[in-house]
Image (cartoon, rainbow, N blue to C red; front, side, top):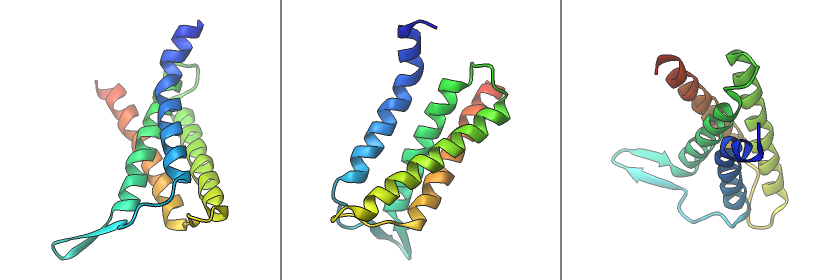
Length: 126
């Protein structure tokens, strides 16, 4: 694979990972939960699920055309997302304006897994 093809393949993953990193080290915005009707919607957790779903899908897309089986790609991407998300949460634990959150780690992994599943489903079913 040439450098341009590699860049096209990996650019979405790098872009999403960079956006997640920047969003993770900046001070947390106020109001991470909003009341909608009778329900409290944890916007922070929703943002984690969406961001990491995009990352999981982008990584799975970058690896999908390679020599690995789909199950191996899925497991590898979920593991990468889990390590990346946990690492950023640990980093947030030492930042003065952020906190470590186990719920965020879980949301990261769930989002990454959803992104992988959606991408692999789309590839399989057109």
